[in-house]
Length: 94
Image (tube, rainbow, N blue to C red; front, side):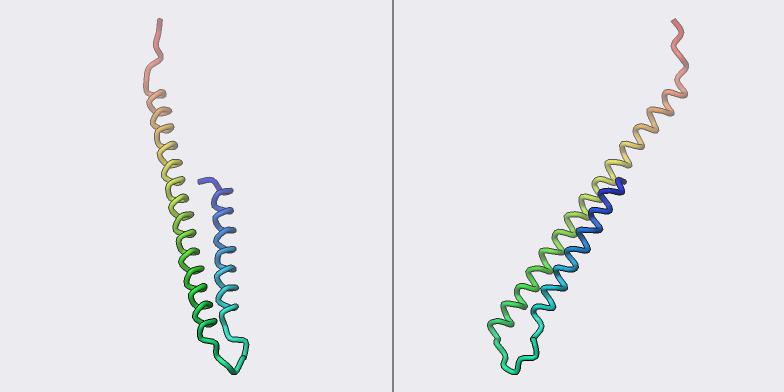
């Protein structure tokens, strides 16, 4: 598997996690005595939306990583089989 792809995946995952935590922290009350239910509802809804978005992005990257790994596995397999086949085939003498 390409390590550059994996490093990019890890970096993007860290960014998504930071965005999710930042959104969550923004939704916490700032020590106010009064409660604004519509504002809190909107913040909670935003947090849920970010969580779902992050989950789907991670799922997409994970799926891409799995597919790339399978592609590499099968490419290596077929290359190995071709190499072994060529080694066992006697040289054609003209």
